[in-house]
Length: 301
Ligand SMILES: [Zn+2]
Image (cartoon, rainbow, N blue to C red):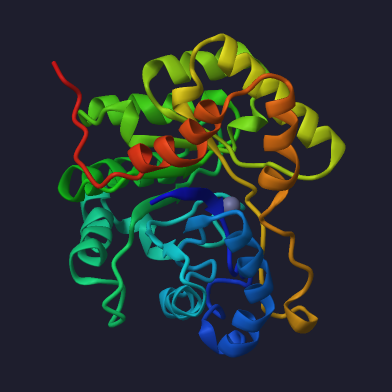
C-alpha cells in the first residue's frame, strides 16, 4: 500500500436517503474539483487513499475508479452502513432485518462487487449512533463481525469516545473476532488518554483521523502522539485528516479541505520533537498495511 491516508473522503452527500444517488451531481465536475488535491498527494508519495464514504452517504465506486485511473493513486472503497447522524443514512428495512441478513448483503458486495460495477470493497465501514449502543448499532456491529469472519475485511467504525469503542469490542469478542480487526475511528474525540491506551493495549487500531492545520487540533494530535510514543504504542496508531470533500447540492461542490496537513505540518513538527523516520514510517506505511490486510482475525484461545 505504501504511504497511506487511512480516512479521507472524495465525496459525501448528506441528502435524505430517498433522494441520494449519482444523479445529484456531475461525475466529471466532482473529479475535476478534487483532482488538484490528489495531485498534491503525489508530491508526498502517497500511494493509497482510503475513501470512507459509506453507502447512502454518496459512495460511488465508479467515481473513485475514474479518479484512481487519472491520478495513479490507489483508492479503497467500502461496504457497510452508517447509523450515526441519527440514523438518517440507513434504510428503514434494517428494523426488520437480522444481523445475518445485513451481513449477507455486505458479504455479497465483497464477493461479487458493488452493484454491477465489478468493484469490490477493501474494508467494512460502519458508524454507531450513540456511545450507549442502540439495538440498530448492535446489529450493525454484529453484521460487521459476521462479514469479517467470512471475508477477512477489516472493520472501521465511526465512533465517538472510548465508551462506544469498548461496547463494540465486546460484540467483537462475543463473535470471536480479534480487536486487531477493528479500527476505532475518531479516537481523538476521547478526552482521557488512559482510555485510548487501554484500547490500544487490547490490540485495536487507534485512528487519529482529525489531523488539521488549525492550531488546536495540531497541538492535540502532537500531544496524543507523544503519549502513545511514551507508552510504546505507536504500532497501533493510524493517521489521517477525514478531509475533502465534494458536496453535491453546494455551488461547485462547496469548499474542499486539503489532505496534506499531516505532511506539511504534523510530521515536520513531531520530527523536530524527536520522532524518527522509522516511527513515522510505522504510522503511515506499516500500520495501514497491517490494519487493512484482508485476513480473518479470530480470537486465539
Ligand atoms: Zn469520515
